[in-house]
Length: 341
Ligand code: NDP
Ligand code: MG
Ligand code: MG
Picture 1 (cartoon, rainbow, N blue to C red):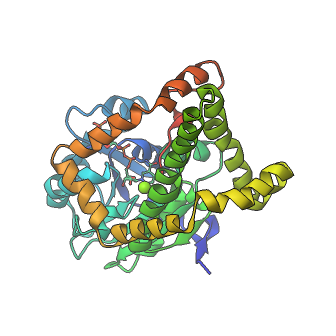
Picture 2 (cartoon, rainbow, N blue to C red):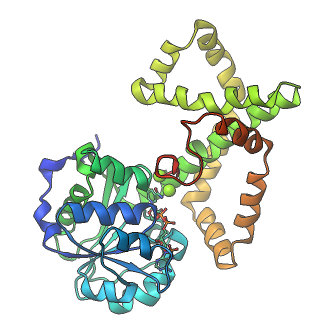
């Protein structure tokens, strides 16, 4: 069974005794910085000169420095810039300014797992990866709850890395919900697989194929949208509450019978073979290389795919229908910020 830890298993005073630099103030960065501060930790934020995030962090009363200055002051450096820029920020601004024995904290294992960052042997290297989007990491904390975290240690020259990792996880509120011990390899590979095969890639494609099948058969796009996209949340909420079993209990017998006979016809066994191929590309670094090489070239493939995705007819129908449902907020607000996590 997985090794789990909760608030009582961690000593908050360890991280309270350190000087922490949070590099990046985006989805995860703002949540970590603010939760740490509210847990009594000495935090500063490191951002690039002219960063768009600076005003937001300063409005919260946080001290904002350049990355180099923040790292020089710190004995714990938390790397929460986008994955594709971490290796450059590390090489140019973090590594040259590290104090002896500074610990590095990651929110995802990508750069360590695929070798884009090789830390100094003297650095403790830890990961506290929230299993939820950054905006929830902050909102749950302020509501007295927490988003569960998975925690790993890659290097432990001090012998204290696990205690520090648990202390950090407690300070961001993660141990209120629970922490699970993992490795950088397990976290990175399962996170990429989950977002590609099921949560983001799989779910998006399933919804689009459903919408296309109905509209191509002549049904109204508005009806197809409600059926194939809007209702998905209601079904998933039931799964979260009580598993697939509760979802099947709540739906009609007609729907439940259709689930059994048509589910495996749509998601046929070769889909599982495709998932295995996706996992293999993650494990051998093919996916990581494709992503990073594209980013390094100015992201032509990423930009093209993003534009193509935005053109799908479901987006036009959805925009129209959502504007009529006042309780659904569109745009990049806290409540609808979504990531595969
Ligand atoms: P974001 O894209 O939200 O981070 C953007 C932040 O990084 C901004 O403050 C941006 O500043 C800053 N930044 C960008 N480039 C630089 C740079 N060169 N130097 C300094 N700061 C820079 O990232 P996420 O929060 O999505 O991801 C951070 C990490 O957390 C990743 O490792 C990710 O995999 C992981 N993670 C993310 C989750 C999520 O919910 N998003 C969930 C779990 C893990 P500016 O405003 O100036 O552009
Ligand atoms: Mg994830
Ligand atoms: Mg992810």
